[in-house]
Image (cartoon, rainbow, N blue to C red; front, side, top):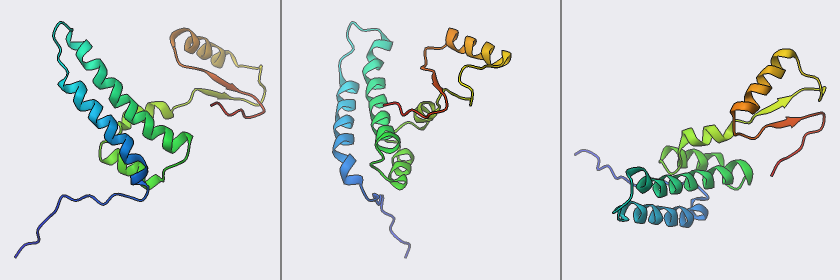
Length: 136
């Protein structure tokens, strides 16, 4: 006789700490999906859904990278199970930092790249000199 498979997932240690928040965001997501869209453009009906998905991903990102409150195992579990968007978190992990020993000296190429970056980007540029500064 074949084994009976169950769909039970073994939750890693620490899951009970983040489960209530994720359940609350999931209920908000259901409300946003069921919300009427009378008189709204199609993109306007999707904004609350994207906002809540962004909040869930940001919550897990902050717990792991900023506050260090969850383990690597729990973080990977959340990404694998779809509680957070992997690509969105990968975008947040990228930092735009220029690490050079001489703070005021740029080569012609790096100066041109820096100018193009500041001109075309809305992202924050962090210039780090000899001392490392932690941004909050």
